[in-house]
Length: 298
Length: 243
Image (cartoon, rainbow over all chains, first blue to last red; front, side, top):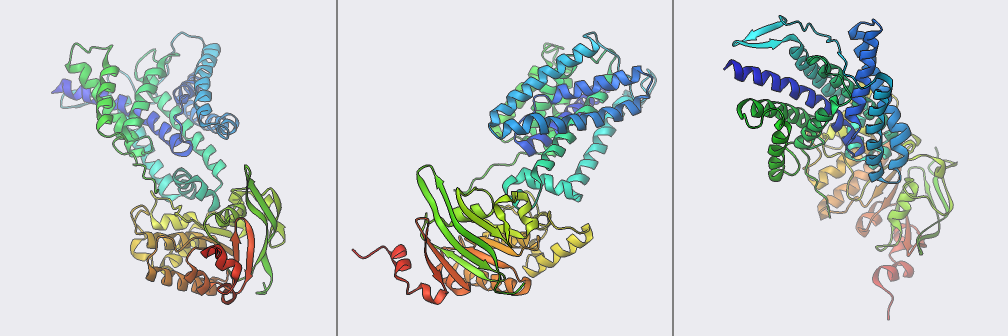
């Protein structure tokens, strides 16, 4: 039982990170209609900046806020300067630009800070004794912090989309850009804000995941997280915020359980096996669990 | 504004797609507070004309002025704040949003506090008899209801010109009659001018103050609804010429 609970806790913690990054992907997808391949590396880059700030004896909380702001600015700038000009010509080109950013940001991080792994300090107490015991299983405070961050973010996003004018505009643009423009919505500004928002959410995922284990911040850190997050977003239907969160948590828990209980899977096949299960689910529900079915009036 | 001032002026508007001339030197006015019906057989260029006014297409020749200013210099998202709103033939509502939210989205260009906007949206929802469905998602509501939601969204921007693209399409006979009465009473109440593209002759002739007929991109008639029925060019365009 304890073992089960510990696996569940670790699965939910990783899952929360996948969910965060998946949320970032969904926000961009809803506005722009493309998967942002650079999302993970953008998160990596901003996390490196947060780490570097902490090495300049800046408190970790301030470093994290700075990373979120930087994520927002970089996301909005990328949309303005790189995505918008090519999207007008060709949707496919956006993917290529995103792939370019993926390698570019990764290399830039390597150039600035080197390829050896770093220790990102945690914003939460993370000593060996900082845990509460639940049914004998240890729930560490930093894991609890990650869950808390996801819950707070969900709450803020719901508030944004349901209660504010900019949120209403973002939904209108995602739903029908042409109609939104004619209703007087400044589509271009809304898109830049959407990319900025996803940049900030990605940065949050980065600064939360890297302190969970020592030596976690390296140039390859975000690869597997990004793959899991894009699977989570697909699983949820790519345009559903709830779907991204459920998808992220499901993948996290599946990974933890499969690795824990099926010894042949071990450490090396955990992601593959979780992904195989998702592919199987997508066979049955091609629009994902929460995705909108596209109905076209003919 | 006096009822006889023209607000929208089209002057020799032309546009080609490849080798096809979709509009060829079309000229007419829409006056303040007037309902102007635009008729013509399929392919006459009615929707193309609409798309030129709403800045989806750029005419290759001619001028469109709005209250004396060059409309072709206005960016699409600024149309609403300039006082022009439209409804769509196949509806272009935000399906994943509620009727209330759809109406609110129409007010994007209007200045005013959130409280004021909500009050205004609710007033329009009541006026258009949408109170019962205000919290329903637009997707899944009956077509006739959605037409009224589009009207509510369009009116939210306080338009001085309302472009109605085939509002009667997909409606039953009695719904068309109700819609016609509704458009006239809204016009009397809010004082907007309307440009109405419509196939349903009964509706056009019933509510328009002025009618313009197009055929193959040319204007073939302009006058009162009473004159339309007897006009040989219009009859020929619709029924075909006698062999």
